[in-house]
Image (cartoon, rainbow, N blue to C red; front, side, top):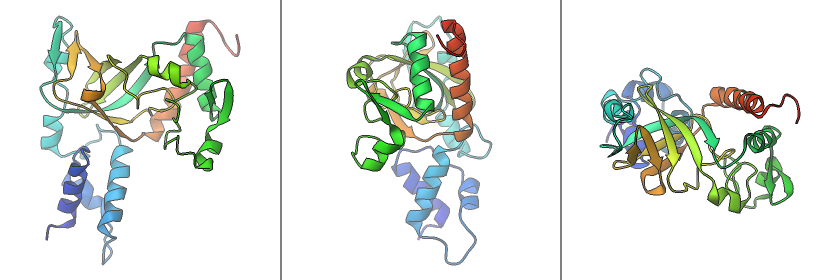
Length: 246
């Protein structure tokens, strides 16, 4: 029978998650005898992996990190009109913007999220209340209607721009070429992990996101999210020419 770190590695690989290093997995396993059930360890490893910064030294298996990083020559060369990723690349979201909304609409959207609200049509709904009602629309990110305070129609027509970072710290812009349902303000977390699949299109250094080649894995880096929300609001208000109000 395989040892616990190997069992955990195999289980995480079956869920298409980034491959953590064996030292990281060993540190995760309590020293008590007997150890916790394998199902509990898998759940803990998955949650902590998705909540971690991919660039943390020692987090990922070195061979995996080398094979799943962005190809610098392709994403850093705007002279290349079109290309495709030569391999799967694991990334985390460090910024997101809805290009379909005005700056002021984005301010209102982020302020609603900060208050714990989203809208359903013209109705303001407390996210916490909806999650407690068991309607089955929201997830851990509270995005039952496409995320944030967008209604279904607006969400379907939205185009998002993301800044994505790989495990080596390399960053790339990602823009929706086709709507990816899991991507939305208030639904996509800062630090959320994604797998950009092999053959994803790249145009002048920008990754073109579409459902076939963008697999959202989930997760969130809590320390980043609040900082991003506050900073994004301040920048949008400045750009929109407002301070504490219109």
